[in-house]
Length: 391
Length: 112
Image (cartoon, rainbow over all chains, first blue to last red; front, side, top):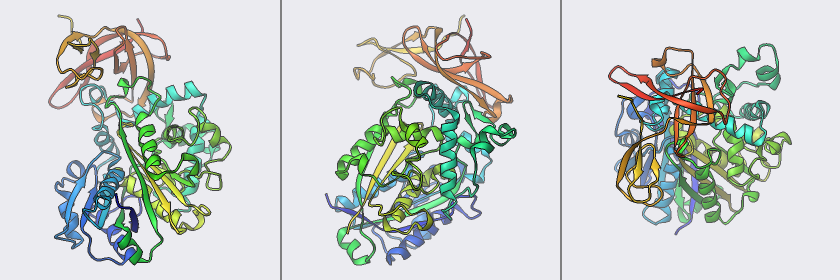
């Protein structure tokens, strides 16, 4: 297996974008091509979840490759729910590692704000089981609410811990010009004050408004290449050193212990094993905090903390920007935003920026190993990535 | 006739699946016998979902995961004012979602 490097990156603002979906995929790809100085690639992988339903566009990868004037390079769409982004990166990794291609462009795009919030929620709820979940009105926030209630009771986590995740990630997003939410929040404002119930109403109890990620448009791109090509670009040598994926039951009720996220555990273990590093070696991590509780749960399942102790690390400030292991320096899904099909590439983009030392005010000092967890469905399909900075 | 929700019992190992699947999760066998699921169970977790999907036309619906008497688990709606994890619940089969084209029936759990 050949080694695979990230040679170019690009991203859009994660927010409401008023231009067509193909440009949401195209703009970060253009930035990534400029970043590495290439004008041709061997193959294009496009990650997206909602083009056919929300934007009424099928065969979307063909539109993207032509829009970028990269024909006749091969192109296809990777749809793997909210884990589409990291899945596309994994597919690109395999293409280069195997020797089939030398340079691949992996671009993700989503334009969910073309529809209103309820329709966007209904679209995302189509991830759940049609006969055993959807018929009851189950949505992703409701699954997160049920998960949170059990998790909190079992491990003594309070609404205050969840709010600490939101405050931390909103703080980080203040330093990320591409983040969706540039809004500092306080525990006083969302939990303690007389206006807290107005500012921060319940959505899926015990989860409230500020426990949820926003509905975002956005795109992000990574260009992956073999070592030979990477050396010629003169860019910092950032190696995609580990990829891991695991699945779990479609219905959440089918899981033996509903507080276990076995696919997160499995994907992370495989990625760490391939990279030859341990969770304790990680300098900066992007976790899939579509709901605040998930940042805490994933920080345990991937091996950063013991099960049931993630919230204690949070209390100590261990995962803050200046802490020992900064988590979600980009603002996370919570504040950077969650354009579902592009999210996993957005996470990878942040890690490459950090490892290159280009993160400005949110730079983690001497970051050499980055880790991301991209969580599909409600944990039924998870892709983990490890990036390593080489000299 | 009393309405039931059907589980799918593996003809080889006897494990009851809900919902159905092509291959048994325990023994990979592919033949199943439909069996009515019991209606009594224990509430494992729940949520009150505010502003549910458009067709519900109510401000809040309650959802939960229940372990039924036979050990099968099911997601359902709750009509219980103050649910508690671990409480005993009993299902009625009621309309749980209505779209333009179809009506769906499922388990709605009450205090026994």
